[in-house]
Amino acid sequence: MKFRFTIIIIFITVITAFGQAKKCCDTFVYEGFIESGKNLKKEINLNFLVLLDSTMVGSYYSDPNLGSKKLVGKLNNDYTFHIVERESTDSITGFFEGTLNPDFKFASGKWIDAKNEKKYGFEIRQVIGKSYWDYIKKNRALFEYTDIEKAISEKDSVLSIDLASKGFDKLPKNLSKLKNIVSINLLGNKFETFPSVLSKLHSLDEISLSSNQLKNIGSEIGKLKNLRILIMNNNQLKQLPKEIGELTNLLYLEIGNNQLTSLPEEIKYLTSLQELHIERNKLSESEREKIKKLLPNCIIHF
Image (cartoon, rainbow, N blue to C red; front, top):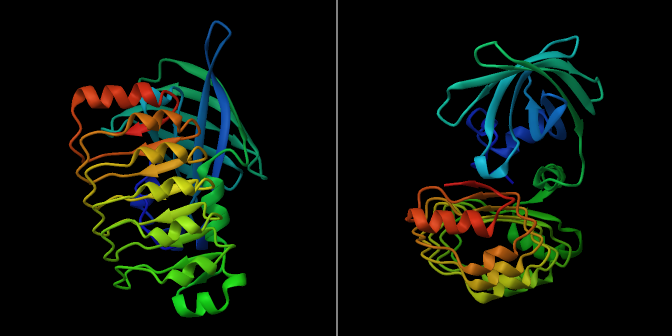
């Protein structure tokens, strides 16, 4: 699925499409801690990938409510690394220096503050199956059909379809025959409403409707109980249906650059949601505070 994915990890500014990313490298997800003095440990979630030139790019956070910080550095041939940590304003806030195991399952070293005055130990271990990145990596490895008629004719074999920028404004009803499909990319088409046939594809765990002309999403979206990743940025949405709260397995939701002024109260049921992108909408400060309270464990990008 070759769609642009505006996400906390800075490598999207370096590699602009996942179609390229899958050819060079994987994203690794870690949990661990930074020692914060007096035998205290601050838990962190961290992820990165290593580009072909050994550049490391990624992000990490401790408290989801405070957002994430960007990471850029270098992995050396002996698996030592030096990573610069930056806030969203690009000001440097610290450094990670350490050693990564050759199997990428464990890393440790020192975290150093920006003024080089404080140094604390850190340890991180790779985790699998907890992050939306696991679904991204899995789906990027699948064979992608690009011909919709061929996909329908070979319906039992289809796991992924890439129909980006093909001028579609509707989908054929017999697409519902694809009972095994897990990923569909509809980026850059002309859909004005959420294609209702998608709600019959209960196996889907990833949908991109980025950069269409979406104005409406019906209640049928609540039928997609298996959905983990939903991308609908760069559209004309003014509201989301309350049924969005039925997507209790959702890990990643991107709805930036729409015309939203609020989100339904039912988003509080998205207890698995790890990251929400809602930048460039029309949210008041009070609405932003409400969303933070409804999703206390989610990284939110306003």
